[in-house]
Length: 351
Ligand code: SF4
Image 1: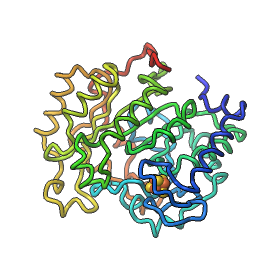
Image 2: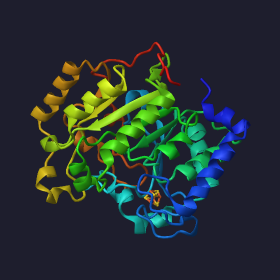
Image 3: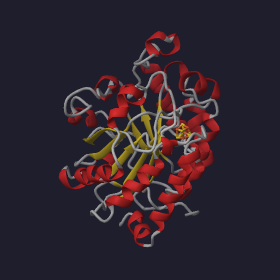
């Protein structure tokens, strides 16, 4: 299946979209915060990000869901900074240390070369943009640059879920696989722990738009994702993630065939050790409760991380070479314990 961005490039549509997005940087509304600062002039913004993309790490990642990592790994581009401020962010070294991240700025042509390195040099199955919500214009421009260099693998949009619908619409046909988080079912907790007081409505709208574009997950004969939506849900201690409400919303309001990835890797890092409600790992009982929910709701497609994943998944972006300690061990903790995604290629009727 040829990714849609190749045809969009040849029609000139990628260039039109990249220009339209870049124009919006002059009064930035690229994400739901709508700061209206001039990022083309590098004016200070909530996301501490200006005209150029900030790329904090580029690597083959073997610890994503099996349909994303496959055997060759997912070609991960970790963008620096973020449009949220999660107090427990496991990537806090690159998401919330903007002074250090400034030195990781690169131009879009260099980013395109890194993408080609992931595809051709490392043999990755896809390009996986992590925390891209504040860099959508730069992402699209880099794809523009990469197509004539030979980019041909599917693109993954791996986001915290706090995304602008207008920005997402510019990615229609460009992104093959959406991998959003659905972090909360309560704006109270979203405000307190991620500084995103309208997260629930924004993330649900964004996930609906992603689903409209790509539909249910489609995998190839080897189980690799080709197109579709995978929603990640991180179990937080003390039911702060609102698992029951979020999973019920997914299955009832989005799709009974939705593919979910239940993450059990929560570990109190960054500011969380000082916050009593967040200062411990999840318990076996909390994990089992979510497993029962999956069964009760009839959620059949996706993966569940085993308990004990917290240590293996913690990245260290200051480590030499690779942010994850042992990528091979990591992937073994992510078994397909619900069931394999639908192989029939059933798509979204709206797309
Ligand atoms: S992308 Fe950054 S500057 Fe633009 S609206 Fe979002 S937080 Fe503000």
